[in-house]
Image (cartoon, rainbow, N blue to C red; front, side, top):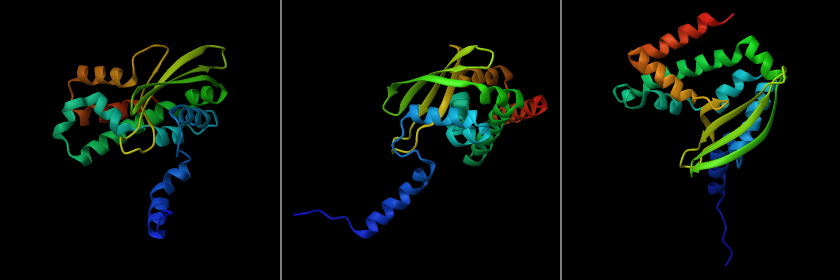
Length: 191
């Protein structure tokens, strides 16, 4: 007996996978996504890369941990948006964007850390010849969604989340006020 799939089932499956197909991330590994991310950065699409591939809600949880429990989903979304905008501004700084365009990105390797968490390491070589090792932490929802960047570090330094957590704790500000300040400070630092 030959099994068949009904037309409605096929249509539902197509609708569920269509957005991922448009993004091109169906079946992509974290290394594939890291390469696409760096390709976008190199082509001048740094803002697009940050928005498309980072998971700021998870990074927010890394930074604030249990302090987020007293905030509504709407407030958490607002803080996540402020964090995304601050990172986008940093990465879109004309000097940073210019260096990203001239850089080469090589030696991509991935190391699974858990079933839904993988580290990707690669080398960025800049126009001055300096090479910088990068580690990006990717996480995928247990339901099988797309891999997203949730943390990163350069040259063996601290993870972005740990650095921001330290700043957050040192500030003694409520999370919402901390992220407002972070966004304002970053906006003021833009040329």
